[in-house]
Image (cartoon, rainbow, N blue to C red; front, side):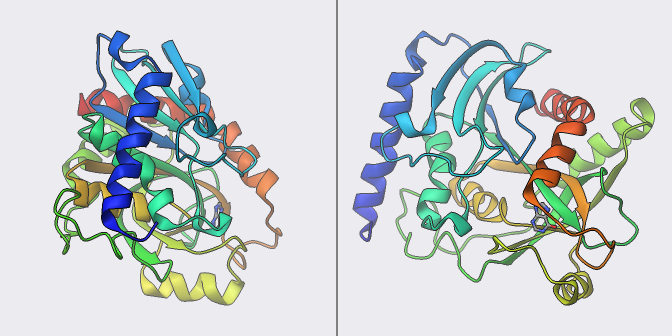
Length: 285
Ligand code: HPA
């Protein structure tokens, strides 16, 4: 996948395939809002009404999802407030060996489908000693620590500008509104705000790295979301993000980390996560 014309063809073929498999033409309420659900956070998609589902691997150019806890499928449906949404229940990661163009292909396809706003969600460790495992963090900004850009080699005006502004990437007024609403209406849900840092993974950070990232300004540490946010901005899709802080970063507790416990915490926090996501979607609609 070297030439941009090839990439545009890939996007078009993937979009056509998804439309075909999900019977897009039969959907009367087309979604303007999409979500990407991270590790252990898939229940939001399971609970949608009038669902249409298709596995990633059944879509042309979409590899199967290789991460336990990620269903790896597209779900169209209506939220509890009858808002139509398109959900990527799972995602691709750099640590799986995928090219950043594949990792962000779902966002490119969303653009083709007319999506105007994407809510990116993830599980992450906290690097901020004031935050707690089980808290939710509204993403206010990010640090791209992957060492690569998803825009690298994607210079084609059909995809968006080459030099992409990153200001107010995670739209602050939506975070302000959701945060205020939670304080007023859902005081039992622990919500904080901060900076999400994405590194390559798949190893968790060492204690020294957690300390370093904290000093660099990171509050949450993960392995996703940032490439998707950058591409969404290039494509002109608005972005917000919600992190479930599933664990303390290494060194902030004496617990060793493993993926099962991270996913378990995501699942345990699912009921409150659903409330937050539903409030965010309502706010955006
Ligand atoms: N570090 C990186 N990624 C993660 C973590 C973490 O502590 N928890 C969940 N995803």
